[in-house]
Length: 285
Image (tube, rainbow, N blue to C red):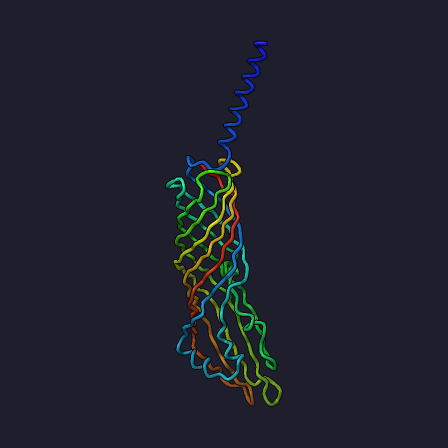
């Protein structure tokens, strides 16, 4: 009987110890201060540059041209709708609820394009051929560095929602190159005028902005969890477009090539803003 009681007491002690150990594994523990996360997600463009500055040598030609196709030789650049991204974050808890977080994100290449109106929808009755030249290997890729403060709405538990905000630096990669040729039919139904244009965005640049957002962390174990995060990112941008515009007359005889600026420069400035949604796995130590 005594031996059975000893076994029963030992079993109860083991059960309580196991229960206590399990409780320690349930959720976030403020004693752990470092989190390292890898994430993958998507983002969609919300706004883009709307103002423009042009080289004076090019502006007169583009402003007086009566033909909408020729005027469209000033192509606008836009962001694609939805793109993927990946990266990592590392944070340190200054207090049980406040943390400082660094993040790095890289995005899908070919992030930018010329407007569909310019590339795909020439006006009726015109002869237009558009060829997209070979793009740079990292055309339009973004590299985003961020430094944020994170406020956790709970100190413990499996589910921990949070708010975040901070500053970011966005490095914009080189964009697309295109070449446009336009033939205008003359009285003899042959090519009367040929307009040629070539534009490229080969400038890389970095801008500083901010981001705000929030999300929720689920601590599957004390040291392992998953995370869903949504952030609104905004920063200034200035896309520099370089290229050349030329016109040659063919009727009644081939004429000389008239160039409108040897190095046409057009810049689009404005607010670049994106909504970033990511899902990640993190470790806490």
